[in-house]
Image (cartoon, rainbow, N blue to C red):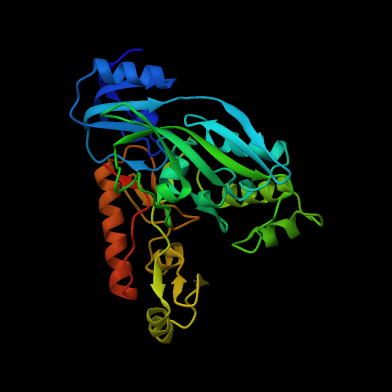
Length: 336
């Protein structure tokens, strides 16, 4: 256990922003985390996972704790489900591949999402019609002040669209230690959302399997999203806005070809990437801050952009979408 001062976080965030932490340490277990918390006095604390959903706009004047708790273990199974407990520091895609290789269904649509397992319930990550809440069972988290471990059920996590209690009510109060997921022994496939069905046809897949869907999702994401190792980014920067049916019909009178997904009888989801592209941002670049040429929903750092430059670009994008469509975009990425 070592606590370092004025430590660069550039390699610990996928945007590649060169911010520094006043104090920085890595923990591999609950015991190590407790020791660090007891030995370091800092007014503010932040848990860092894969750094794939965060934008640093300034240095962090507190303690950054890098979570590297490992482990994937089956804790229970019945005729229908296998319950798997996963360390919060495990890479999300590694866990997905573990499930795919064992033909366990539920997370194949979430293949190749960057980041670690600990952030998955915090963000309620989702893609192609599947969200974490669909496979989540429970998690254990350590309160950073009283250092007591608390168990959270799905209900207690308060899952919403890219939301949970850990982003608002309990923001920066807990360190997620491990997460238990419920996977299906007999997978139920979901290929209705996005381009999965089209991609499967291109792959000449006639029989659906967990691996086939995972492979299709990987090909789709690889084709349209930049690799953070090559181009700094945090994936989708904005949430897809959800509006009422009445609001949608009003906008449809003005823009007849506006795409949409029906959530329920009263709620409509609009693709944020389409809105941004219609405002002319796709492929935009100002210095090293830009909007990715293949997917307008992704803001990128082409080399030496500052967090503030990327944040300012996001503000300009929000303003233009608001002016043209009267729709308010909300950031998915956490801003610090």
